[in-house]
Every structure is written in structure tokens, then in C-alpha cells.
Image (tube, rainbow, N blue to C red; front, side):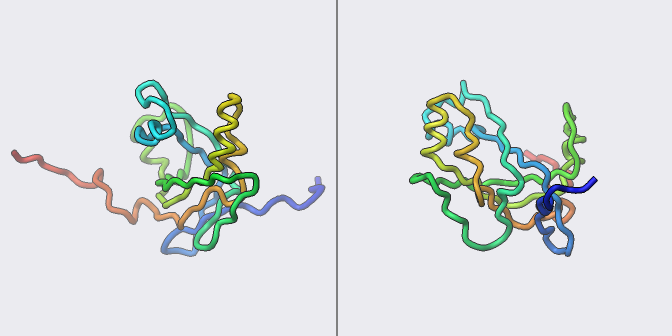
Length: 160
């Protein structure tokens, strides 16, 4: 079997403090999970559950540099994100399995063509064209969780 044309290069993110790279398969995003932002967008957080959407891996902008301003928008927004890099997946995971699946963390920017997204929402269509475009997901190097201080690693005694 031969490829008809060359497949896309694998999308990877550097791992902080090493020469290793983290392979990116899918990017899952959670929206409507921050109450103040839900209100800012005109909804009630008590009656608006979070939603999950995806971005293609090849929309990542890794490391420093300028982000391309996307065409077809006059209202580009950004949101700072905590990126959780998973080494494995699964479904119906308990807390221990979730913790075991996490490889590390990175800083990210989620870019949105807000005017395009708003039009799509009004027409009850998927957000894809508002949320997925070149450089719409900027990411820093991934810091392995083994290199980070985390409260779950320590025992605390509450005195009072």
C-alpha cells in the first residue's frame, strides 16, 4: 500500500526540560465552564451546562511567535487556558485513573472568531468555523506533572 500523497507531519509539543516531544492526537476543549464568562456571553451559569468541543491538532501554535490574524472576522477574542496533557485516555474513569492519565500541564490561548461564533450560535449551527482556524490554539511547552508541586502530594493537618 502506498500513500497517494505525503501524510501530514505529526503534531508535537516540546516537553519542558528535555529533548522529548509530546504527540498530539486530539484537542478537547471545555466551554461554558467559567460562570463569569457564561454571564458575559448572556447566559445563566445555573442553567447552562459546560459543553465540549474539539479543535484539530494542526491548529496548534507551539511556543513563541506571532499568531496569524484569521480572515473572515472583525472580532477576535482570546482566553487563557490551563492545558492538561493526557498520556492515556479512557471513559468513565474514577479520580485515581484520571490522575494517572495526566502527563503534564501547559499554558494555552484559545482564540475565537467571536462574530463568526455568534452568527453560528444564532443559527443553531456548530461553532467549528468560529473556534477552529490556523493558530487558534497557542500552547507553551508541557511541564510533566512529576516536575510540579501539587497539593495531592502532601499531607495537611488542619489546626484550629
